[in-house]
Length: 102
Image (cartoon, rainbow, N blue to C red):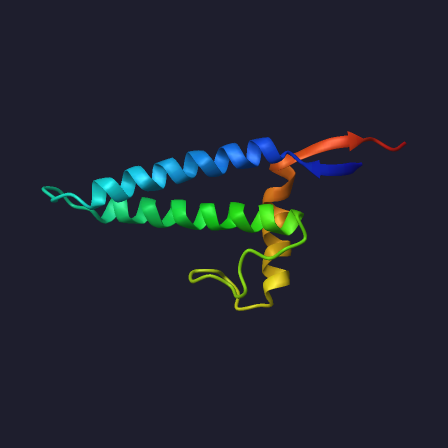
């Protein structure tokens, strides 16, 4: 099978995550009357996911989103290897089948 990326779905997901990040930052910027650790962890997860989606989008265009692995990444490897791992992990969920060979 030959795959291509579904750019519209990827861009839509990036926009949704960006909106969630803005909402959480707005919430974290107000005076706190309750614990904020859960919101901070959620923000960190969203930021990591946005970085991964940006890396996937850039990799499919033949570019690199990051010049070095981000903080919290499980490897301190070559940026090309990092982007390839992201593409291998997230790519199938955004793949669109172009043609199927016998």
